Image (cartoon, rainbow, N blue to C red; front, side, top):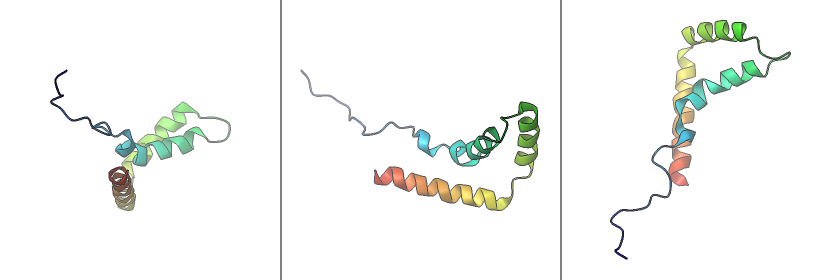
Length: 77
């Protein structure tokens, strides 16, 4: 056979581990869904809108720091 004219990648070009949603939205949503008595979706929706509209600047800074740490883990793998 002919030699391949492409290089195989060790990992796919998209890394779901690096999705900002994994660091920003899902932890909050998970905490709401695990509340005692199960989630009330009306309350979750209302809380979500309030939370998104009032995210403090420090939360974004922490998000970027955690995302950069995760990027480094992917590069080191």
